[in-house]
Length: 333
Image 1 (cartoon, one colour):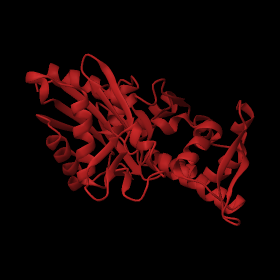
Image 2 (image 1 turned 180 degrees about the vertical axis):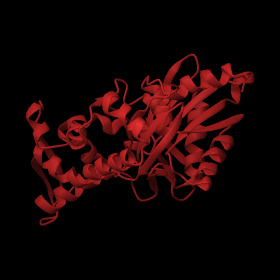
Image 3 (image 1 turned 60 degrees about the vertical axis):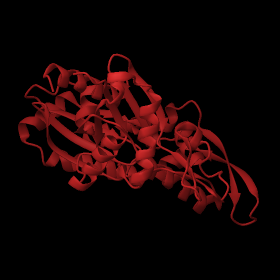
Image 4 (image 1 turned 90 degrees about the vertical axis):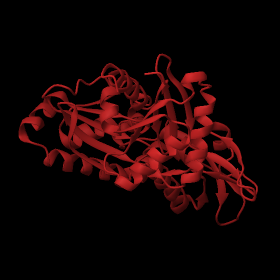
């Protein structure tokens, strides 16, 4: 194989890139800012994210992926080209073999859009794998044996639940309730309760600092309040309020219950032998959403199954692409 092997976790919130032999070399937000008049790309990644909600009229900060799939093809292509160029692949390696992850139940049209975007960004070959499978490999689960492993991967746009055995997905579901939905729950709660308008970035900060999956989880938290600034809907002027951690638990309750219900549905569709394995082996949480305080104990309590957060929850999928690329090379593909 003469081309460089590159694994891409093309997430709604973040894009992570793994280069064979180097590990995860890039972790940036999936945001592109463009000039509305000329359609020229102005910034990509973190610098573009810093512009979200703060741009003048002619500058658009766009998140080209929505709910785990490509919402804006041109901008996704622009973003992939930028990041592949940033890897500075030289000579015969300049056209890499790319392995990209996608949610488990996307359509063939959406799958083709992802592969087309990768080819146009300069890929020599493109492989597409389902995210929960790659996340399980990245979390060091041995999915090659005839025993059941269950993965709950909570990203920015989608949550994937899958049960794997003998290297393949046995049952799975994908729902559009994930990090972005939780942010919107917080925005809605603050607006309804305090008549204060906040943006996506502020909501994400609240979730990171004092986000709790349940009221019980709040007791074990270090920081339990957070100062939130936004625009007062009554006066129209800037205002600051103090939000408590238990309020975030109430705000996100419904969405988190949707995730629990999805896990229950997948377990109900699972062959009894594999179900027995999961009761003993538990569920592994991956993705950024896995870091929500108390989420593991909430799911464990609701399903009466042990739940573990993967050590490398944020980079699981990217590291999984690395392991799969090694295997592809070993098979001579």
